[in-house]
Image (cartoon, rainbow, N blue to C red):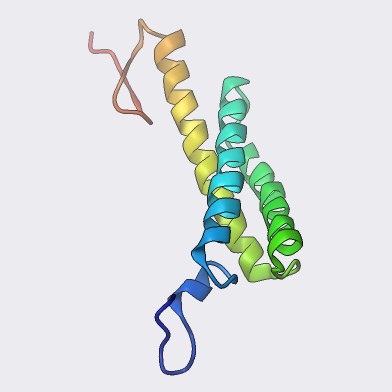
Length: 126
């Protein structure tokens, strides 16, 4: 259950409209975020530019909103929840892109780059 203020507003309502956190976690984070991670990784593996994640994230945001609508009775045409779902998809897509690109730069250009964490690479010192 969520904590509600005196005026009936809860912090949980900022992110999800269902009565519990479960549908939001399942649909938005696991399904939508997982698909976004994979699409970001695919964009990086095919050497396409990172701005394409924005387009795919917006499409995935609508798909997530449709699943909330069809399975859990959520609002289909809610600009706020669409923006929230899309933001999660874009953020996880960018993380997937960056992780794959860092792995590519270290693997393909081993003589120039070395790993510097899971999302970064660094030039080799001369």
